[in-house]
Each structure stands twice: as C-alpha cells, then as structure tokens.
Image (tube, rainbow, N blue to C red; front, side, top):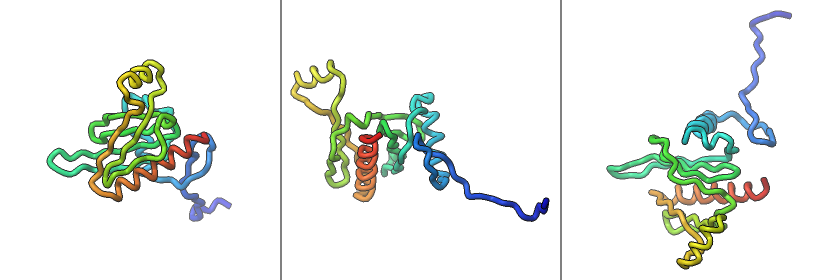
Amino acid sequence: DNDSSHLIARLPRAFYGREQYFKVFSREDALVLAYLHVIDDGVYRQELYLSHYLWETKGSDSKCFMILFTVRQTILIEVKRKKVHWALINEMIDFPIERKNTQLIIRYERKNKKIEMLTEMIGQKSQKKVLQFETLRDCETVSKKLEAALQYSKFH
C-alpha cells in the first residue's frame, strides 16, 4: 500500500575500517575523519581511524591540539592551523607509556639503520616526545587511548 504517512527510517550507521563492522554514527568522528583527509594535503587519507582526543592549552598563547590514533600512526595536530607537529608509526613506540604528573612521555625508536647508528654513536638509544597537559585527567585519558591504539595495532 502506498500510504505516505508511514515512513520507515533507520538510525544512521556506517562501516568502519577493513573489518567493516557497524558502529553508531558519531558526528564528531565524522568531522575528525574529514579533517584527517585534508591535513597535509591528504597525506593521512589512507589511515584507518581509531580514536582521538582534543585539549586546549591555557595562557596568552592558548592553542587547541588533537592527538589522533590510527591503526598505523599516532599524530599530534595543532587544530586551528591544521599543522601536524609530529607523526609516529605505532610499531616504533615503546610500551608502556610513561607518565609523570601531567606529562606524557612517549619513547620511540627509529627503524632506519643510519639513524640507529648515529644515535648509538652519541649514546642515545631511543628518542622521546613529551606532551604537557593542564590536567591529570587529560594526561590519563590520552595515555589510555594511546595504549589501546598500540595494542590494537599489534594485531592488525
């Protein structure tokens, strides 16, 4: 019967990742995925998104940052300028992640032989990135998300 007063609607949903599992649509996730496609002229377009975290620094030079976790990489972005500060391949990151109060210390090793030889010559076996947060909660949340992304990356 052609009764137009009865419309069938389903909740929005989308396929995520290679496994093509269903997940409830999130407007925030969709915006982050769109953002991932435009930063650095689409360099990160092929990355499989896992999660992200946004935080803002305080003070006169306040900035908004996003740390983006994909299956292959962890990427730190300054949001308003669309500037990638750094991107680390997850398999290079040492586990577990070190936390000191509101600092998150991410140690990583380069997989390039020339860089390995140079760092050994100067007595530096691993390098590190230090993230400073305003609150302990921000630091703990990013630490947990990073550890989850690293665990996921090991199996995919």
